[in-house]
Length: 542
Picture 1 (cartoon, rainbow, N blue to C red):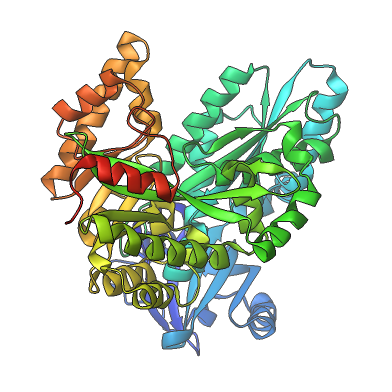
Picture 2: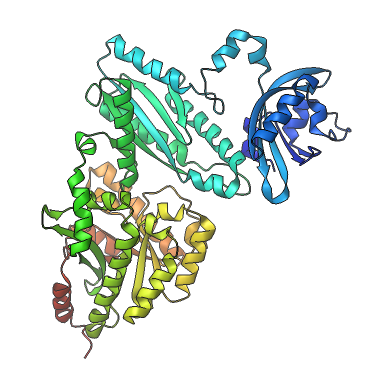
């Protein structure tokens, strides 16, 4: 039951049955307990408890049997020591994992013990109240500026669901260590709750704050050594700056939280500086979304895709909204509102069905035309997603092998078993999958070989960066070349999006990129214009 991560952060890990008979002790735990090499395991965990703390232990267990935490004394060697004990029930085998941290030093020095109440019990970081005090001290000190960061782990819920809360706690402890190593001991840092962390950063420019945020993301992106396999997480960071984004603790924290949620919605970045626009969401637009669905104001445009010879081969379906009240509304604005309102599964199903109906018409002129449709993480994670896709295929009678569903790396960070089952089921019906915005996420590249993916899409940020300053463009060209080579080495095709110049096109062609989309060859267009392009391409069926 123990793992490399747990062994590093805990003094001992026990596994016991329902009567607390000891089944296992971690190797570090044996050394900590001072168990002789030739001695057997203690027979029962209760025998290790100080008699005066036995009732407290039993009471904690009865009060919350699935998880409990208490401070008790254990008999260790010829003496005793205070420990913080966190117990997690393993329902499937009716056993407990007991995680032990030695707190004897705190108890021996009452001043240190009192200080412990000002720290997060799990990670040892400053408590919320201590962090609030640190911010308020800065507010009174007269410093010209400082920043409040709010960092939220992406994919952490899956760790708890798949590996259990003990491993989840170990990941949080490791995350705290990584963040502290980046910002140093002088910066106020705490776990706000769950998988959220907040940081106070002093005396930095906006550019410097962004660099710190980038380093924090890189620290989180390193694999976590969990059992039975490594875990990969990402993070989203929101930043609020004093005085421009708030003059008190509450305002700064709220605006950092708003920026963090905005960062989660961004496709190519996980860091967002607060802006007033985030705090002034037009609630009338939220109401207009419901009206738009009722009155059919949403529609699709199509971003043509071309092969390396500039021949039309397919298109990506893009959702658009022309509001009777607000005119053309950008997807950047309405998609987050749709997702927050819980309407994305409905609109996603509509877009897929509409795209399939249109594809059927396209096939009358060009039978090999391929349609790509975006799938949001919310839509993919919904119940019955795979069946909704199959129903749309059956309803329209379209060739399923000409349908590609575009999913992001963050979607793959959801429940791995459920994701793999859904992808496999759809692939068995001929439907293909492409990884959208490839390279902007933090998931393991192992999914490229494990999951039934047929292609990757190089994000436009990498394509446009190839024409930056000479030193930067050289690095980005190497990066794009590496992505293409990686994909081809495992028999995946490559689509480059956002291609806007002949220089970009020529480089991608020479690097072996398979398909191109972007303003250089065509902007998003209507279905009628796609039909015109088909007729002009000379590949129309006769």
